[in-house]
Image (cartoon, rainbow, N blue to C red; front, top):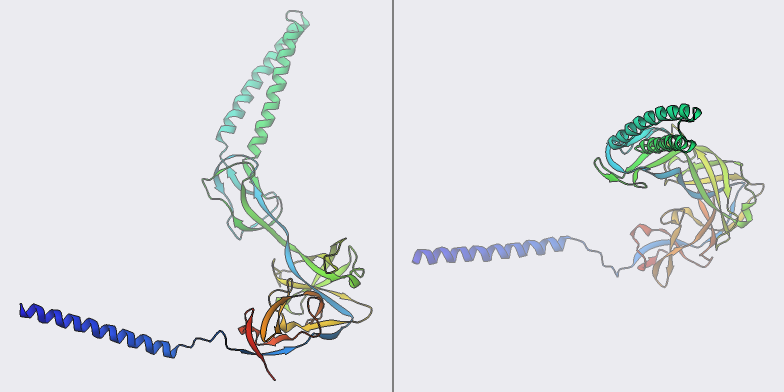
Length: 351
């Protein structure tokens, strides 16, 4: 009995000692771990929007989009028995990408073809009998109409058979596979998402004062941010007939892709245009930009706090971005230290 009590006491003591050790270790880790005080002011450098001269070559910011991107859907219904493509595959226009079960349609076609052969024989016989006045015109016409009806039914079944083969409407890359083998599909069921990037659309926002410098069919030079100064040839394909709330017009150009430096949908880009004279406008350094050039934002210091502010951008020359609206010359825009910021963070401006 005494032995059992002794063992129990030892176990309890070990448990207590283990708990004390774990608590001590936790405290030591917490002392070493640095957790930034969210109320602590973050040191930043700022500048104010100022007038900047954009020289003869103007640049307008945008994002590359695929020339064509659509879900390829089934025209027929049935069980998907073959899928010839995987995500990332390159397909050509007219290439078969999937196949539905067509066994029942083929059997129906065989049955109608046999019926047509019989009706052709009947029609030939009734035509001969009609000439001899053995049968009435009505009886001969019924056989003739029956033959024409069967031929129409055959054409319908042949179209239904073609619908069991799903083909690519244009050349492109399979960006998504939307069904699996064995799926039951109906007319309109999407099979794959097909993306064509042989050429891309680059849509930029152009201020009112510059929109008349563009014309449909005009040749332009496009650039992609990831490729630096590499030029891509483009052609203006559409100019919006109505401006947005900031008096910017959407100008769309089609840019031929390159085999050496492949453009991808979603990349940031710009369209360059030679101008007859320089333009001076309120601008901010491009390094202050937060997020994409399509929806530009900057941190502005107001009342000791960093506020994330959207603004409408215009011309860009790679170093500066024109401010069309959303910022004023009195704003303090953060140009250094914004990587540590969140909206409403406390900040301290470096002297």
